[in-house]
Amino acid sequence: MSALSPEPAQGLVSQVIGPICVDINVDAEGRASRVVGGAAICAAAAAASLGHEVEAVVTAAQEDAELLSRFPAAVRHVVAVDSERTSSIRNVYATADQERRVSTALAQADPISARDIPSREVTVRHLAGLMVGDYAPDIVDELSARGPLAVDMQGFLRQPDGATGELRFRRFEGGQEFYSRIRFLKVDTAEGEHLTGRSDRREIARALRDLGAREIMVSNAAEILIFDDDGFHTCPLRPRSLAGRTGRGDTVFSAYITERASHSADDALLTACATVSLKMETPGPLDCGRADVEDYLSRFYADIRDHADRRGCEERGCEEGASHGK
Image (cartoon, rainbow, N blue to C red; front, top):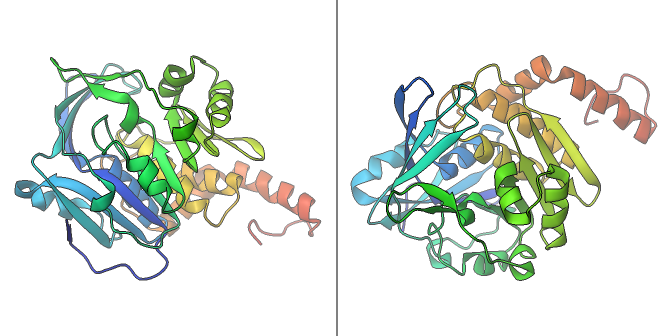
């Protein structure tokens, strides 16, 4: 393990943990592109673009050390964990909207264990994995003991086929002991259906919360749903392009959990949906500033923001016309 940047000062919001990945993306027309990313880079980039201090703890082979420079400059703290291999996935999209794909593992990095991860004061630790085997078996137990934990279930469900490498859902044996350790849990609709046997997103969220996870995100192509102590919250996605579709879930989850540290679920979700909509317009991790996200919110989410302003004023009894967040 080696730190590639200065030790973070106090105020670290997120510690993102997972492999760097070389993605080979093939669109419905057969055009192939190579993008250095993976869940960890996309997640760290999203949090940093919103102005949050984030540390990325990532695996990569020593001969691929130059890939670590692909983090946007706003990600100022990177810890490299040595691995025999660097992860690589080939994504072949069957449709123009990139909602149907076949993913194949070309290589997988060594598992990350709790001892690889610096023990720091941090608001939330984010397991941003890609497939089964990215983490040591006891990672959730170990990290949840350090503080709030966010888990994207794709890293615990997608397993490479032994013969072809194709990523398929495995049978997941985790029960209440696993889920009760998780502050934030993310699934997409397919993952949620696999875990719960239910197809309705609200029923998926209810079932996962019943198992013990405290706050649930269920994503799909059109909308993000949150289920927490106050009930359900939803917000649409409004990208103008799907050129950067890969990394959608990683980006929206990271944006949400880091915003959630200081905002309501509704406000955090609105910012997260604008963040990921902007990211989806360009391949690779998001690389912008918070002002760019605020501009996107003003241009494409004004109706939702205005509605939230009015509702907030009604709840607080403030004068009509007061601005959102005051």
